[in-house]
Length: 175
Image 1 (cartoon, rainbow, N blue to C red):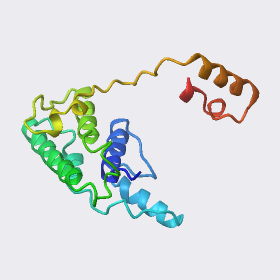
Image 2 (image 1 turned 60 degrees about the vertical axis):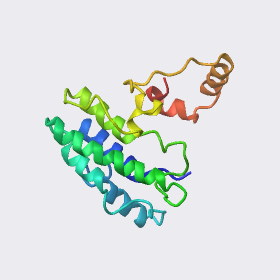
Image 3 (image 1 turned 90 degrees about the vertical axis):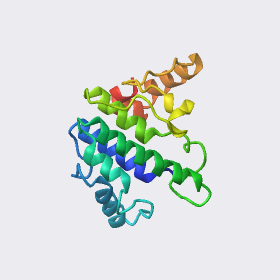
């Protein structure tokens, strides 16, 4: 499945700016740094764009206290997302309809803005932001689902008997 690389770039950049971290030594043009790194390693990088289109504007305004300005850029993001979905058979940004109606780049931007106490639009007139997928509430941290007893027993077996088991190597990430 091909995923929306622009959306992933925007979300990575937002997370890194929000948490004051960098990727490949960058906090601004992460997509270009990652693209360059992949190119140097001889790996596929063709789906990483040179230009982030409307998402560049979103990144530039992501801390703006001006609600009208933010609403305007979110409206542009909605249109951009909707146009990509309308041509899903020919557009590599989305691999299938699974993510087509889930505006996670917009929801994430709004989530971060709420956490920072910045204004976000509370009502939208378009279809995309009025779907059940757009009503998803992002919790931080997302709660883990209940463990299945058999899965728990298997995990405990591997933790006990295999020191190279990934949860043993990375501790708290897997608690």
